[in-house]
Length: 409
Image (cartoon, helix red, strand yellow):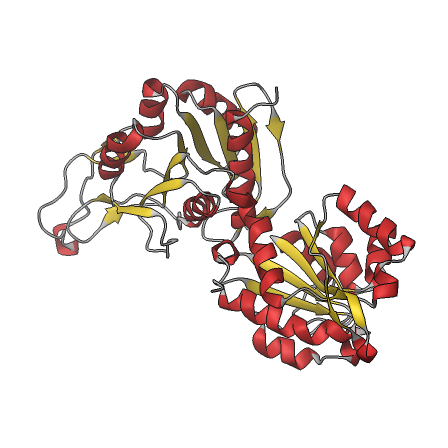
């Protein structure tokens, strides 16, 4: 009895689905549907040749945004005039199904004469291609060499199956089953369970410090970054506990602990810290709280109240002082001198990996789906990845965690 593949890794991810001009293009409709049903945001790109076999309207109706077909013609007056750059930078994964011999040759040769090939060259996201062509073409040395070149560059390939081809012939070159292509996409995004056996504790969201029963001191953190890390760690096989103030949806495999204040988060984290292997402090914990909470709602007619503040517990410092075998990842939300402030915080609080960002930037601050960060570690290594989605950044942070725990011999 067959079982449905685990497509959890697609949830919340931005996938560009490229469709090139082969008879198997109609099967890409099912690939699109499966990925959307799994929770992916799918942006279709159809080549001019693909439009000879399928219609853009079909993909626009099923996908998460209208299908694009041209490098130059914008779908609307509000669209980005350079769509390949936007699509390439914003993608967590690019899937091409079917990938014809022509498409593979252009991609291997670095030729970008349409929107799909330009996006393939503009992206830094992983790429998965599903070739489909006639058997003689599939077996041609030029196609074999192009595929070998792409594999050597890190491109993932779903090999075609054997079966009935166009014209009634039978042989190798038939597009892989759409279910297998969607499963392969999920596998690429999941890193194939490389965090299995690890216990990961993640914090997320901004804490609320009560002024009275109605009002509180808070911040603009949405919790999206912490939730993305928790979901990514679960998809990669870790046992994950998420301590969060946010109301965002959570992967069902994540143990969720709801808190509100810095004090509650402090207690929840320290209670679970000893049993963890990795702690990722992505929450925006308040530095100050009212020294006393008013028992009743403060009234305007009573005048402006005087609110005396006191420091909240420094959770990150407490973890840095207590850690034994644990790896500690901290986040630094800065508005100036991002690298210098983050480096000082890393040393002062005993952090192994610090993720710092300028929260005043419109595309990398609070409440947005993208982020631009600086990664610093205790060995002095500094990395500045390009702007990416928070889901892609979550995997990048976890890649660094995995590499730190398993250094090369």
